[in-house]
Amino acid sequence: MAGVLFGEQGISNITFLSTELRRKTLDLACRMDNNTYPNYTPWLCIRPLLSNSLSKHELCYRGYTPGEIITDKHHLLDIESFLEEHQELTLSNLIGSREDWRVLLDCGSRESMILELNKAINLLLDSFYLKCVYPSLVDLIIPLEQPRARGWSCQYARGAVFLGFPSAYSQLNLALDLAHEMGHQALVLLQSADDLIASDWNTPVYSEVRRVNRPAFQSLHAAAAIAFMVTLSKDIGHPEYTHPEFPYSLATALGKAVIALRQSCQFTSLGKSLIDDFELLAET
Picture 1 (cartoon, rainbow, N blue to C red):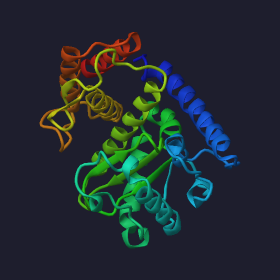
Picture 2: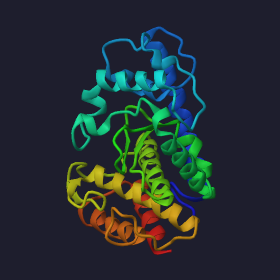
Picture 3: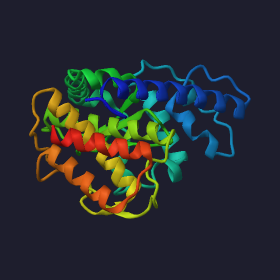
Picture 4: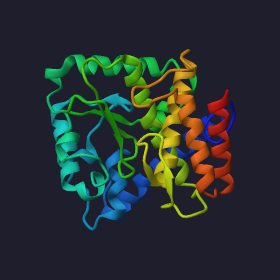
């Protein structure tokens, strides 16, 4: 399947957009702060919205292996502190309380969780497509304290993926949750180049993830997340898989999401191509 986000062209698009945005984000933060940050980190994305320099944040200088799970306690403390300091931007749209989204600080006490996360990453990388785009979409994975099935990506920390799950959670479901977050990350990249939705971004559209009406851009994000889950389920031989969060197969959920978006929204040329890609993925 070839398209805006999928197939060889999709891999090329994601790789190019990610590389360019990381470079521009790093350059802009360095210029705004009159500082030299050693490399791109997700936390630099928030800089244009702040009145103060980020140069004093240790987090902006921390090294890590791209795509890895962060387990170092000091690194995790820096992340939690950063989120707390900028919660009006990073945490304002999350469901539940602040406690629901606390970073797991003591990974040593949850070694089994980290082991399962690594297994889920390896399962996800069995998909050729997801393996190709993983370095462009996931800079680091941050485990959450609460043992609940949940994931979170923030547009002001592009490349940072937060994941939590209960001890009995299946490896496949965890890999699908990671793919879900990669879908959000991919759409953020695409939205940096095009509006995608030509009509009002806040038009209510039924979301197949939350199963309520949400603003159009959020329902489009839900469709992208499901599309990445469908891709993984098909690539590893489970095309009709039903995730616990959905009452029907992932492909069916994606098809319903496409119908709802088409009924309520007008799209740019690129947005139309994206919706066509989603529809084809749901049908094949």
